[in-house]
Amino acid sequence: MSIKTYQICTRCVMDTSDPGISFNEAGECNLCSEFLSKRAKHNYHGAESDLQFRNLIEEMKMAGKGKDYDCVVGLSGGVDSSYVAYICKKNGLRVLSVHMDNGWNSEEAVLNIRNIAKKLEIDYESYVLDWEEFKDLQLAFLKASVPEAETPTDIALLAAVHIVANKYGIKHVISGGNFATEGILPKFWHYNAKDTRYFNFIQKKFGTRQLKKFPLFGFQQEMYFKLVKKMKIIYLLNYLPYSKNEAMELLTKELDWRYYGGKHYESIYTGFIQSYYLYKKFGIDYRRATLATQICTGETTRQDALNQLETLPYQDEKSQKEKEYIAKKLSIRLSDFEDIINLPAKWYTDYPNDEKRLNFIYDSYRKLFKKDKLGNF
Image 1 (cartoon, rainbow, N blue to C red):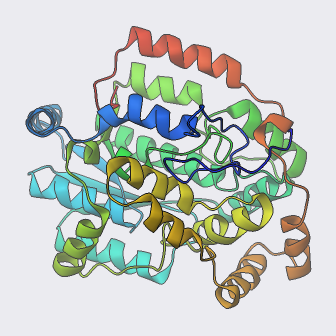
Image 2: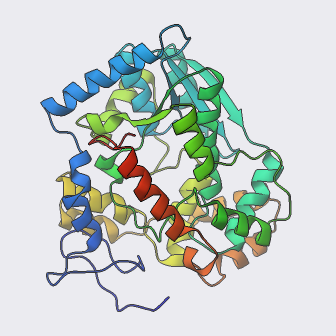
C-alpha cells in the first residue's frame, strides 16, 4: 500500500487514514461525494417514506399471519437496535428479539436488553456462541493485523438472526443499520465480512482450532436465505426521520435504557477496537465516519466535527483496564496482546480475497432483483 501525503476532505472530515480515499479538484473526497449523489436517496423523504413505511408494516403483518411472529429484531442493547424494536412494537408488529451473545456484553447492554424485552412485552431468544471457538477466531483476526477485528462478530450476528428467523418461519429480519448515522464507512476500514475466502484464509493461517459450531454467513448462506427461504433484511430506520439523540432520550424515558459510554460500547470488545485499537494501529478514528455522515445530512457542522476530533477517541486509564480485561478473557498475557497491537498494519488486500468475484455477483444480483429506494431486497 503506497503512503499518501496527508489530506483531509474540505467538505466532510474523512482523511487519508482511509487508504482508498481520493479527492476532486475542490478537495472533496469520494466518500462524501458518493454519499450525497447515491446514498442520500436512502434517507427519509417525508410523505413518500411514510407511505413506504406503512406498506412495509402491512407486508410484514400479512407475511406473519398464522405464525407466532411477524419479524425478528437483532437486539444488542445499543441505541439503533433498541429503538427499532420500540418502533416495531409501537406499530403493532409481533416481534421476536434475538441477541447474539459472543461473551462481550457490557453490564448496560445486558440491562437494556432485559428492560426492552420486558417493557415492550416482546419475546426474547439468545443465540450463544461457543466461546473457545469464538475466542480463537478473534485472536486469529488480531494476529492477522487487519482492521477487521470485528468480522467474526458481524458474521455470527447475521447468521444468528437468520437461523432463528428460519426456525420460526419468519420472513422479515429487521436491522438497526441506517444511512442517517452510518452512510459513510470506507471499505479499507471494514472489508466485506461475507468474503468467506478472506475469512477462511485468516482462520486457517492464524487460528488454532477447527470451527465446528461457529455459524458461517457468506454469500452462499445469504443467497439461500434470500432466494430459497424468501427472507428479507429490512433497514426500518431509513424510513423514519431518525435522530440518534432523540432516540436515546425516548429510550431512557420510556424503557429505562442506559447509555454505555460511546458508540458501540454496548460491547466491551467492540468499543475497545473502535476507540483504541484501530486508532493506535491504523490511525483510524472511527468517529470520522459518523461525523462525516452527520455533516452530509446537516446534523452537525464541519467545524463542530473538527472540534470533536481534536480530542483522542479513547481515555488512557480506561483503555489500559480494557486491555488487561480483554487479554485475560482471550487467555493471553498482556505483553502478548501489546505485541499483537504493535504488529505492522495489514489490509484486506494483503491476503487472498474474493473481492472481484463478489462484486460481479452482487452487481448481477442487483440487476436481477431490484432493491427498493431504501436499500431492501
